[in-house]
Length: 174
Image 1 (tube, rainbow, N blue to C red):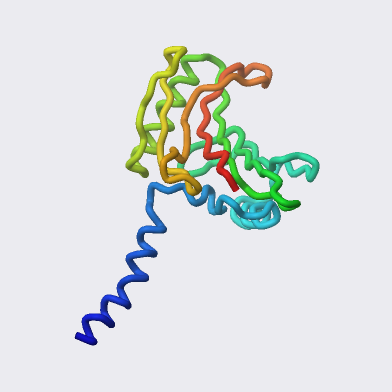
Image 2: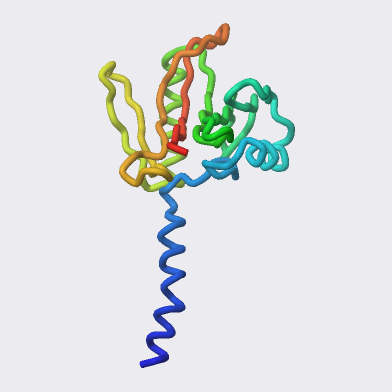
């Protein structure tokens, strides 16, 4: 009896850990954990991906241009922060592929969704009020009833690239 109880007590932390590290919960992206401070995010990214292309302390984001992540080339990868009690917390990441035409953006959006479906089980296609498809997937790290990311189309203000395909993680409530 004592051995059975001891075995159960030893296995309980493993079961809790496995639940906490659910593959469909988006705890991090590009190796940085959501909810981390700006300094931790900056240092982690620079150690893994090199110097940031945009890092202005007066802005609520830092960014890379022309980065490859998970086999996908991204034109812009932006990490957003929310100010909580004087501390900036990482709460959103938007990865963008710039496109010259709407058809190119649709193709890029669907390609991203196919790629993410290979890695994650929760990727579902929806149709918006405008008739365009978008995808929701994963699980928010702060709300188990909310999706973790959205793959969608967007417009761009960059000359020559009026459209974009994006994947947005967050903004999570940190």
